[in-house]
Image (cartoon, rainbow, N blue to C red; front, side, top):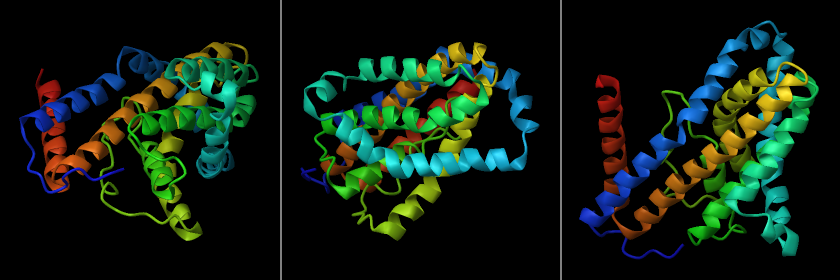
Length: 260
């Protein structure tokens, strides 16, 4: 992305954009996400009684999916058919279908479907990155897309955007990529646990899988808009000032919500 004026002080227009991005982030965890969190919480005991080895499988599946799905998602967006199914709406439709199929057999098929769901989320995130003028072939942008998965899960208290890598030039060698995935995977695995909890019951899990995938694809799409919107602002204004203002407004909104 071309730097427009990275030392420019943040002005009223920039502050207004930050407020809009904060509101977009808050809206991402809306009524549908609240309903899914409630549904997942009702059968959370299903995951608690599973052996530790299975919980480790969720973490391993998250790491593997984050490592492998970026390239698959990028290739799936190429060509006539890939482009025609690359819209945000189509990504949510495909995610809904995938989640329904994954939930038919309960936990087992839901776990097997996780790489597909992750690929569809990556497709959506990549579409947002492209809309903001980013080059998906750039290793730095792969890193930025990965950071979207590090946003706190829907409905969690830790639902902020990780701004620590905005100004960094990331050369994703093998060790660097593994380190970044290790940082992001635990948060993504926590979200996947909610998804699996909702899909725990065979057959009934199909409906839950469809709903969770629809919501999760939408959630991460919105978080990608916030992430790359902020990244664009850091190219136009002083980066430290943009990030400080974002966290200040986000903190104010949270305090207002709690005091309401």
